[in-house]
Amino acid sequence: TGAEFALSILSIALLLVYLLVADRNETVKKIIIASFLVRVGVAFVDHYGYLTHYGWDDFFPIAMQIKNNLVRGYPMLANVTESIHGVAYGVFCSFIYYLFGDHQIIMRMVNCFLGTLVADRVYRISLRLTGDHASSALAAGITAFYPSFIIYCALDMRDAMIFFLTADMLYRISLLLRQKSGKDLALFALEVVALYFLRTQYLLLFTMVGLVYLFVRSNLFQSRLQRLAISLLLLGLVWTGYQVLQQRDYFPVLFKYMNADLAYRTAGGSAYLVGVQYETWWDVIRWTPVRMIHFAFGPFLWTVRNVFMLLGSIESLLLLFIVIAAFSKRARQLYYQDPKLYMVLFLFAVIGLLSSAMIDSNYGTALRHKMNFIFIFFIFGAAAIKCIKVRIV
Image (cartoon, rainbow, N blue to C red):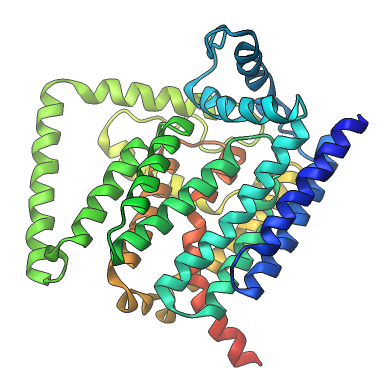
């Protein structure tokens, strides 16, 4: 409608004003504004035409139910039966619709904005790690124009919010590693809570990253002997915990849950490793590396069945190049510039990818879920790619 279009243009103008006046590096500002406009274009094409096939993942009805409950004075979650993930995102959307009306395109604009800010946070994290504006701007540029980041941040889905909260959470960690701040600690805690409700399977990931953070913040991280002692202690605790859980028959229940999740995710036309299930820990150990390869670098060209999978396959080849650069000698030297921050980022990415790969069996969901971790390799890889570019010139 005319009112909806006018409101969307107004929201774009207001968000652009913020991006223009925000105090940031001029190169990064140009990248952010350009990528925001690209996302807006994709959002309009998909909303008023047809670009993606994600209509089934529409959170609009949930948000409308919550918003109507608020307007009528009912309990916020009355007659809302969706999962905690849908409800968490729906609550946020309901406030947007309460303020601006029942126009889904407005929420798409908000997601475009949040997705754009991910590039800004990547730049800030990279600058703290590398101290180099050029490689940090390159990392921001890769993030800003990486195809999946554009597509999934232009939809009415929770991914843009998850991407932004994760990137900002890691940025807060980078600040806290240098200097304690009540503001940064409070924002970090709020973001962890929000991410838990948006994607509950991150609870174990955040627990492990929290332990890593506490470890690198402590003086125990400084000595090789102390690191070895702590590692042995942790291995001992893991072994003890394993024995206790084994005696209580916890693992059959865990494997049953994991297999149910795998079966659910194989729905659709882009499933991989169909029929593979976990019965023992040996199954987990031998299949996780294979799942990791499919999750991170699939779909492969020989698995392509439609144009979306073809584009995803081409994108995965680009990601493979970036990951190779991220493990190059030049990129590994970043560890010595800020060992604590490097370890937090590296372990967050690796643990996140591994834990997600263990229960994913669909290239479509894998493309979305790995986005939350691969931007860390953009930071590492940009340091090496920048050097390659300099040599060519």
